Length: 265
Image 1: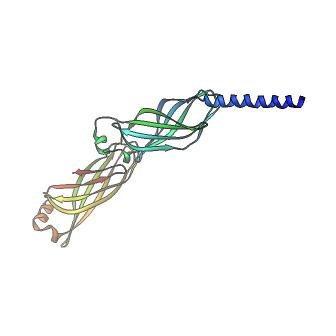
Image 2: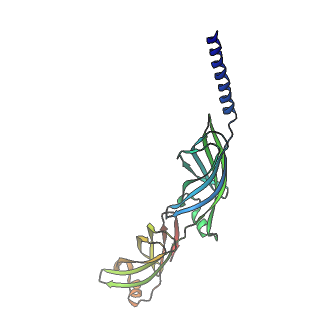
Image 3: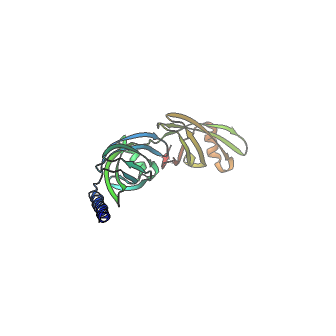
């Protein structure tokens, strides 16, 4: 009989203990999320790197793992790219923590980047629509939306000058042209290319394809030598060049790591 009561007692403990655990599961509360701020970590010719700081509060008596964050980035309320962060975090029981999450927004992904750069705003206003995935007894998704201003890149200033006749022979003429590139950005511009047509007196003389690299907040001079056949120039243009009395122009494109645009010099 004593053994029977003993077994009955254990059964009651398990039953009520299981009910308590089930009740705890059924009373799971969703964590709350608030946007704190955005810290700019780095800006390069590829884009902006920063840290999004969120305050995450867990009202439950047990920890909850955060398994993933997915963010739609918007410009003028239209999404243009999605960022994912699969770094797992653990939100402690009955705790409120500020957590930083790394993000990288490529300039090349921003729609109409040239128009955005030429606008009067110093920054690019972006919307972040994020979803945070928590693994409780079942996975739950909690949204948080916020706005972030990122600095916009600037187009380099390009000028053509110092056009001189370096050498004239019976068959060829060598023309020296100097391009000045001023980079106003706080980052180095590499992998940039200037391509286009060099003209004298409205006549196309040669194609120019020149790769350039400019350090941050600096200016460089890029000399270019053009060799032209005297036969292709004609006597009139040759006389203009010999006398130094001629007009010149350049029509082409500038290819930056984050944009391509047309120039006329």
